[in-house]
Amino acid sequence: MNPRLIKKQATRFPEAWVFEPVLYADERGRLAETYSNENYSQFGIFDSFVQDLVTWSVRNVIRGPHWDDRMAKLIQVLKGEIFDVIIDMRPHSPTYKTWQGFALSAENRHQLYVPKGFAHGFLTRADENIVHYKMSAQHDPAQEHRIHWRDSSVGIEWPTTTNVLVSEKDDAPSPT
Image (cartoon, rainbow, N blue to C red; front, top):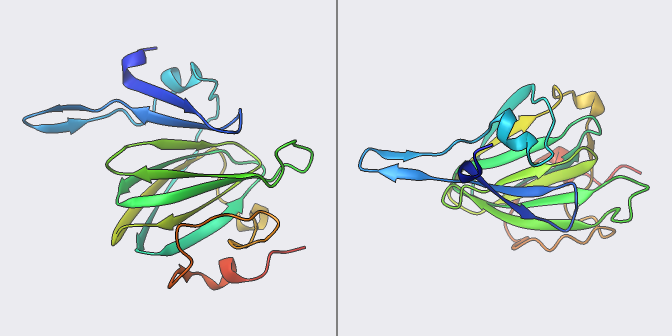
């Protein structure tokens, strides 16, 4: 492992991490390694990522929170800024329904590792936002679960709830 390529920060969940790829810049521009099996496995990330997705969103869009018990994710903002949230949805976990929020942006280059069993959602904070997901399982709507973004049993403290844009699916009451 080349420790100069990535920095790791702990979260309140021992299974989730924030990574910061090191940026190299010169007169030509910038370079950062965004993923390497060898480097991330040194931090205990052994997932085999099988699908990548990208979302494009305007300001004040809330996506999620969603989860698939089969799927871990590595989230990174390519353009803009998001308030990213993860929620432990593992029923037998001591941190069940506990959430934590993170500022991810193109500027700070932070990546969020979302373990299996954790819901993930975000609020866009810039006029134009591009978010990249690496996923350890193929997206399958039949396997996806969701929790309402304002579910009182979780109590996420979103930076704003005024004039947000939410899909009909995400704004429907949480399934029981």
